[in-house]
Image 1 (spheres, one colour):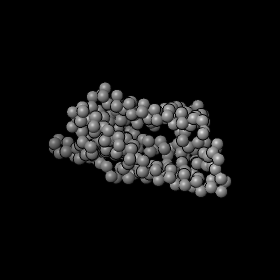
Image 2 (cartoon, one colour; image 1 turned 30 degrees about the vertical axis):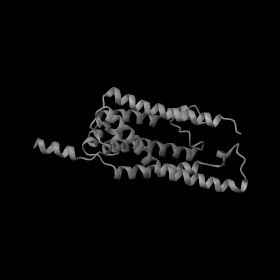
Image 3 (cartoon, one colour; image 1 turned 90 degrees about the vertical axis):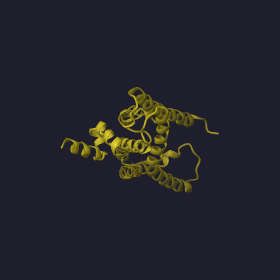
Image 4 (cartoon, helix red, strand yellow; image 1 turned 180 degrees about the vertical axis):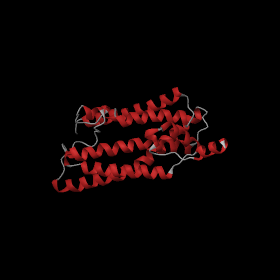
Amino acid sequence: MEMEKDMNTVKESPKLLGMFTSPGLQFERIKQNPRIWVPLIIISILYFAGSLLMANSIDESIFNGQELPKDQVEIILTFTKVVAVVMGALSPGITILISSAILLIIAKMANSAVSFKQLFSMNTYIAIIAAVGLIINMAVRFIIGGKPEIYITSLAGFLNLDKAGVLSSVEVFGIWGVILTALGLHKTAQFSKGLAWTIAIAFFLIGMGFGLVGTLFQGAPKL
């Protein structure tokens, strides 16, 4: 009877909503029964919805300081919105694919037996946090206005800054994702806690680095 109960537990699929309430249990389930396509489709739909809200928050102010013909502003604005929505829907799959490949290389170096499917599944389930964060932030921006690239749940949003940069990377859902990444690498990939946290924080710092580069380019003089 006990053996039958254990087998049922092993076969149980991880739940996306469980990432909010019992992430440790979900990572154990991902290790035993990784799922990819259904959760990835759900994540992509959520990102698509969030990107639609973002697109509706974009206005002509993004072209401030740029000399564009008035008759082309509307066309370029529409094109920008379409690209934002399309890239928003595709970005989860691309990001998860790249990060999983990098983690697999690290896993091989660390002699971990984790598979690419397990890592891909783990990253897909973690992405639910960022997806919900995107929808919440874009919904609020759609209602109250402001620059959609600056999350209200970030330090930049809290300080009401005008430009996205390093402080925009210090964000509630982003930090939440770092914690879950460390936990997932420990539970699913069987990394040591030290290695798991090192990798999770390194990914976070790299993201902040990109934010810094973006800020420097924004502040660069126009030629």
